Image 1 (cartoon, one colour):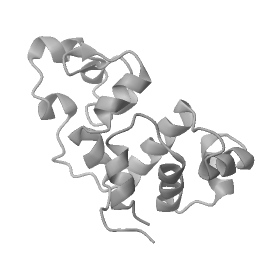
Image 2 (spheres, rainbow, N blue to C red; image 1 turned 180 degrees about the vertical axis):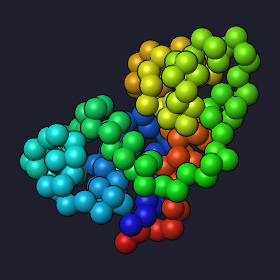
Image 3 (cartoon, rainbow, N blue to C red; image 1 turned 90 degrees about the vertical axis):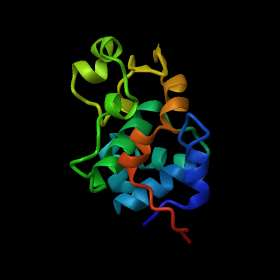
Image 4 (tube, rainbow, N blue to C red; image 1 turned 135 degrees about the vertical axis):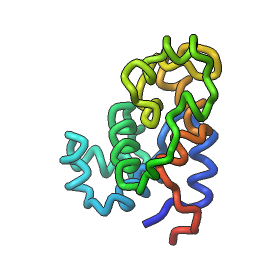
Length: 148
């Protein structure tokens, strides 16, 4: 399964996962609703309501879903950490949790990172930046071919 161009374009302009992204992510992982519920530690009814758009996807489910999708992709060993991609000065990167915990390719999962020169304290503000960042988009390896 692949993410459609339209969903990928919308991914870049929002901070929150919507029902279409959630459904595409589940399909990309090749999981049934029951299996997805088990992976996320939620009920099947919750998965169904997320996919129907009846309930918004909570932050914890979004983070875990994005993480799992990112692990499916074949990440090139040459994929640079965020501090290299963003060319962070030494002082900034040494203050950043992504550097401290050596998670430069998963920086988008960590609150408190220093992106665009500021500490990102909230998931909402952080994801506005992250969703247009080369680090997360390359990690998710979106296939831009249209999906039926």
